Amino acid sequence: MSSSPKQRRLVLQRASSGVASRYLVTGMTLVATLVSSSATLHGGQTRTATDGVYTDAQAKRGQDIFTARCVACHGRSLEGLEGPPLTGDPFIKAWGNQPLSELVTKIQSTMPDDNPGSLTKAQSTDLVSYMLQTAKFPSGRNELAADDVLLRQVRLAPAAAAPAGAAALAASHTPSYPPAANLGQLMRGIFFPSSNLIFNVQGRDPGEQKKGTPYEPSNTTAFNWADWGAGIYSGWDLVDYAAVSIADAAPLLLIPRRCENGRPAPVERADWVQYTTELVDAGKAAYKASQSRSQDAVSEVSNQLADACLHCHEVYRDKPGGTVADPSNKAARCIP
Image 1 (cartoon, helix red, strand yellow):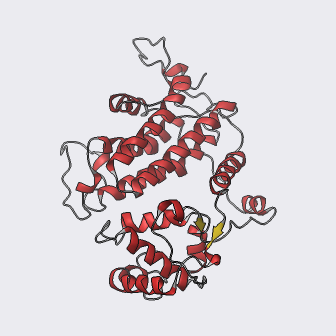
Image 2 (spheres, rainbow, N blue to C red; image 1 turned 180 degrees about the vertical axis):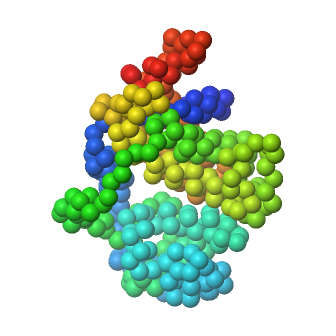
Image 3 (cartoon, rainbow, N blue to C red; image 1 turned 90 degrees about the horizontal axis):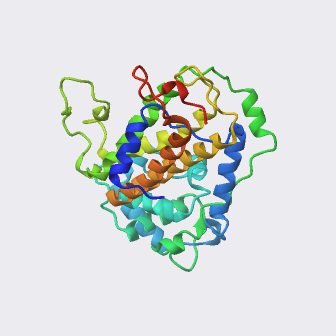
């Protein structure tokens, strides 16, 4: 279902009290669902960087670009300085199970940090070739093509299987804490401001807000959460952070906690995790769109985020039968 910008803003107004979701299983079940989905996504990709997907000449071109544009942040040996390492285990863990198209797009759209979007697709592909060479992946006869369809068919490495019992072992050594926020507080602290930043892209191009722009609050008489990062981060950085906050914070909805009215959040219901999963997917989709640095792409994906919010609100938040003292009938929330 698609929502107009007006409808998305309406959904956002509703979001101040509680995006929830439906299908409780357990946190581990949600993780398993997401992992399974990821495996399906990559199931059609049959090549890895071990197959010799670039040429030495291409890697040399990439090295020249890297020396001129990337060394200051990533180091002469790609070891990472201000920016992350582009070789070694951390790099493989971050990018190993993703198609090379994701890495090329990341470079082309967001790098270098002081002039993002200034590299061409071909240059970005050459840079990836140099990364492959540095990581000791073999070269081949054919260049790595600067074509998304072909790049999607290649990953850095096969997905590594987690050791048996690793999740249980990690869980046994991880401290647990009771939730500090009720459901309404969690929504207003994380999901409402983060969603609003993404919805704001509908009418404002994040590219117009550059890093280092002087802070100019839109309302000097009140604290404005939407301006918190102005002058520190670029507009696109803020959209990135909002999107990943939604994706990573959504599983917090599976932790038993109280709703604002004191009722337990209905995490035992089957529909709770379904909507949580929708919120995770919407956050990831928003981040991917933001990485393209396209206002149109983020505006489009805001439909998915709006629907994820709306699906839950229709069941658990928007309750008829309000009174003068409680017009929105908060007393009835968290009850399907």
